[in-house]
Length: 140
Image 1: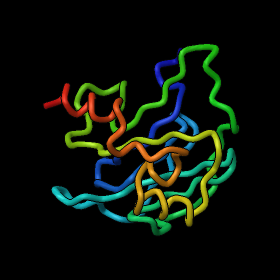
Image 2 (image 1 turned 180 degrees about the vertical axis):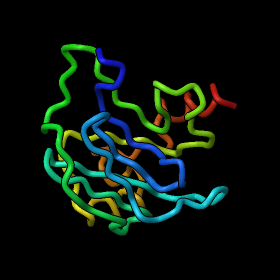
Image 3 (image 1 turned 30 degrees about the horizontal axis):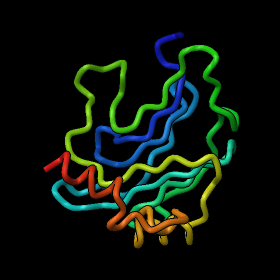
């Protein structure tokens, strides 16, 4: 590995979102993400164009190279919220839900997910199911 092969979705130093294909193309959003405030962030990439969404609304879109398949034959990485080549670039905060899909989602689908969480995509409602209840008991 060249120390930088892979993909990242996180923050740029100015607190705007960045989607990058390390050493190929950085794509920066336009909205500064406020600290201490819940914010829904999403990004899509179809192999040619990246779109960044903030709170269900398109923040910015543009071309980004890199191919449509994440090649895991070497040692590429998918970094979310930090940069592995920098010891001081770690995300400080919390994530409610993380969803990675092999299909490019529309703005409408992203808004539905933002409003409903995983219930929008799951075939079965997880509320009060044994596995969810057990997980809550273990956490508490």
